[in-house]
Length: 154
Image (cartoon, rainbow, N blue to C red; front, top):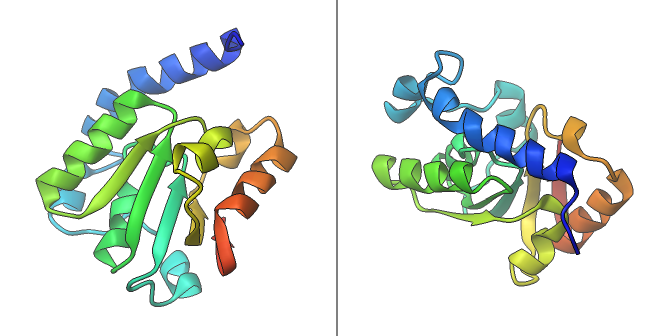
């Protein structure tokens, strides 16, 4: 099946943005590398202690939030359709010494790309949902990724 042109263009746009975001003051990578978390205080409070929990971050971009959850003790996997972003995320994890796994795949293909693994927490950060065309299909992905008793955090 041929990939729709809009998706090819969207992925190319995100691939192009990775180097700009890595050097952007908005993302403030030097502060993050020095130990700052990128999560909002209410996200941390809402999920509470994530120590030892397995967390999948859908549409993780270059992984700052994913790695922040790892710094808080979660066992993390980040997934994004941009290969450039996933490579940057893996490199950032190595650079700061944080254990994390990153996978390149379309969010709708996440269960298969992750080998049907399930997680305690499915996390999606700010600005991710607006890129989704099929919320029902996305909800099914979340359902397939969650363990019984697991949590979705938007």
